[in-house]
Each structure stands twice: as structure tokens, then as C-alpha cells.
Length: 166
Image (cartoon, rainbow, N blue to C red):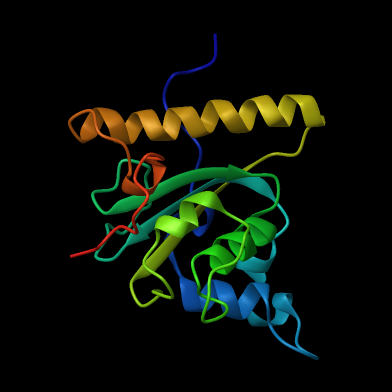
């Protein structure tokens, strides 16, 4: 049986503010991601677990972070961040379909948004899918155990209203 501990290493062992992700993942006409942030650009099309938090946060990312708001998994970090931004009203003044949890994010808010990426090594698609779900469950469980059997706020799907951060 695989480990029941979340043992993925956060990319660059740090949180990335939204502004840094946006500049690298969508650099604009004539610019290239790898010239803006080579390290972050190296994982933009990778699969893995991502954690979204609201600063202040600890230095080293972990899924049991006090101000963690969401844990998710994806086969492409850039595509998933685009979906989140579209639904959270970050790219435009309105919200659009793309990421269901982002509808619970305060519309357009990015000032204290921090994201950690935990890449997973590429493998056969059916194995990658299983590993993504397994690690997402481990990450959510790490938060659940440390925070009195509660889920990260945006992972609570029955809450129809945007979360208010204090």
C-alpha cells in the first residue's frame, strides 16, 4: 500500500504570488515564459497537486497550512490556473465557467493569493490519474487532521457563497 503521508515536494520550496504566476504563465505578445521565470515556466505544463492560500502563510508550502483555502489536482498547472482565474473573476470583471471552487473565491481578489505547486512525475495516463486523486486525498486529509476535522474552505462544495477572508 502506498504511503498515507503527503510526501510531494513543493516546487522551488515556496509559495508563488498570483502576480508572479500570471506574468510567467501568460507573458504577453512577444514574451516567453522561460525568460521571465525559468523555474516556474518549467512546470507550467506539468501535472500535480496545487494548494491555494491567503497570506499570511508559512515559508515552506504544505497542505496543512493555516490559511490554506483550496487543494486541487490537475494534469496541467497552467490550464487549471486559467480555469480558476476565469471563474474567480481574476482575468475579467465577471466570472466564467471553468473551475467550480473558484466561484466561491472572492471575486477578482489576488493581492494575498499564494499558490504552491507539487509536481508529479509523468507516467502512463491511467496511473497518473490515480496518483493525482491519491495525492489530492492525502493533501486534504493532512489539512483535515490538523484543523479539527474541517476541510479547506473552498473544498466545501455545499457552500454556495464566496468565502470572506479576514
